[in-house]
Length: 371
Image 1: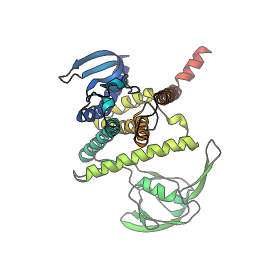
Image 2: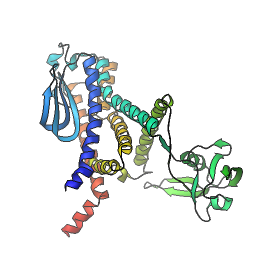
Image 3: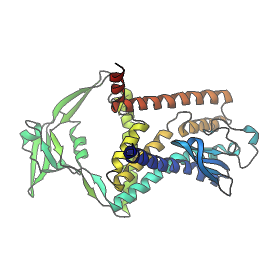
Image 4: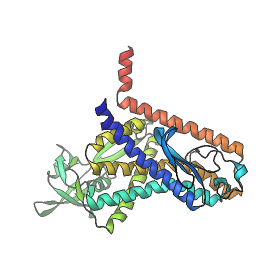
């Protein structure tokens, strides 16, 4: 039990606390800059475990349920900022008294802080330990595959496809997958010699659960492994921004594939899976742990920008409507929207946790135990 605690729970709590603190500190810092008094800064929900009050009157605390956090600003009637005390509209230190632009900036600052933290963390990693990438070096060749027929051998380094330079294995896949059944010329290096071999990617048909067919090309090779390249102090921030953008677009693409049925929803994970991954990754050292924390920070920032009431993105949508209309939405409409948002968030949490239990075979165990 103690071993499990230190292997999974402690790393999970440390990583989650860092990511949540960064998010909430973004809200806090911009709120203070806009002249809003912050009543509470909490890491976690529920009863307070420990805390202190600073000279500005903000109560900083750690709460009993460490699965999130919140910043309660002066004028908020709840931690989610779902309701405001309109009687404080004339109080210059209250959140409701601020302009719609200032309120939007305060709300957006949370996700922005997560992205900025990830960029800084990745910049540090790229300079200190290097940037991971998969070189276009052939590790395995599938027997009787297009690559084997063309004469590609393990150890060959692919440098171009139809004249387009190739710098990573992922880039190679991107050039080959859209061209099933077409002849492509692969340029490679073998023992210092450059060779150009024609081959035809094999057509592979995939059918998603909605019956949609996807046709991709495969040549039948595997990569040789991952390498690391250190970046300069000047280039690392640019590469970190690029990597962050790739993660954001990749996550959005993956979610869209789940919506249209091209990818299974079993990949969605909740707190249990995050705890499992935190424990496993932390055992590999500090560098993988920092990398995982950066990825988690990006995902938290991105999810909070979804236009769902209760999340930051939902607040931003309401502020946009207020800016267009010239006045806030009716209180009844806001209440209904937040109820809908709460239902969506809770449903997603339940679904993700169910996936965690299924993937960890807890449900299977319980079924066997009951029967």
